[in-house]
Length: 460
Image 1 (cartoon, rainbow, N blue to C red):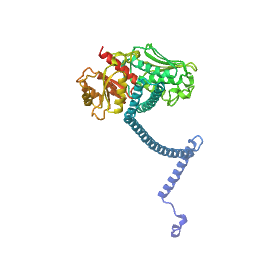
Image 2: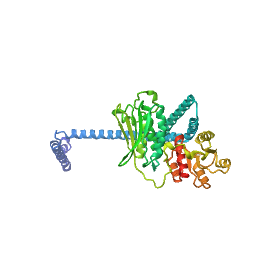
Image 3: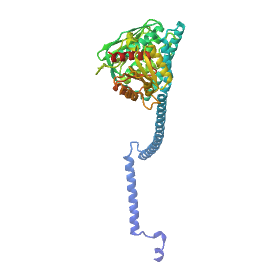
Image 4: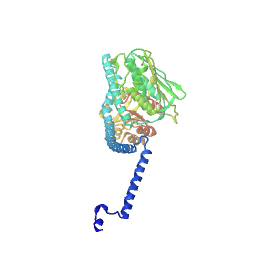
């Protein structure tokens, strides 16, 4: 019995061990059955674990691509930040350039203004034919310099957004009469005639900016017309006055009619010797007309000339305007003869040139760099008109403030403020004070017409 009990081959299992073994076998059978059921009810291809592995792989790829996307976004964020910094630097540089141009414009225009005054004064004298031709060439060259410099300054101001419109009502002949007289002379040098149809319609616009548009139209008409005539006139439309400039030039092909309003684009003239522009004139026209909300139209056929026009809304004068209303044929008559004109400017060359010009028109001129010096030299003589520079560096006040101080003694004194500052606020402020504003370089013909008009109004 003891031998049998100690034999390893016939050791009996305890009940608990038997139960555990049976439970283990039962669980294996259940697991096997479940696996079979999963296999039979899984993916359509019968490979759920392969699908599961594929899903895991896709998830890993999504994670990797998400991380790559985040890295790309970070790089784009850095690039965007760098782009904003570069844009800010460019805007700062552009603003700096504009401020520089604004600061030096006065100094640049001072000698040009003086040269124009001297040349215009010379033209008033009777000179030998050869000398008169030389003076004419000088005047035209100075006008070219003025046009190029004005174009560059205007483009800079337009790009920087600091050129603002000063909208006010005025009679359109106050603008067109002077331009017609000026370009009649310019056209005559080229052997062209200018037909001008005046109009007394009141419009509402920025006088200076609108003048720039019409001037560019006329300059292009003269530049590209070899023979024939030019036309400056107006047509009344239901929604505004259409100011037109036409020519008998080569015309503009239809394919070029949009391109010429882009920067540095020019129509091809028949003779390049007369084309001395930067290709910016019509680009400035486009920007100014957009700023003023005036529509610009072009009608042209190749070989049949061109008509440029701008449509300006009608205006209404609240009171009698001090803008130019005198006919160009009346310039130089009556009112200027013996009229006492006071001129204040801190530039000796400007004073000398203004004195020569005004004396040639028959005026009695008193010039000085300050009001006290002018009053001391006047011998108690009352001025008929005051011409004053806005920037008076040595006076401690600007020309408007000085004019207001002088008006305490002469309440009805007409004032013309001359400046290189194109700020619309300055022009608006001068107009509110019943002062006229002319921009440098001063155009002698416009000054002459303005003085004639002011003196006629004062002594009417």
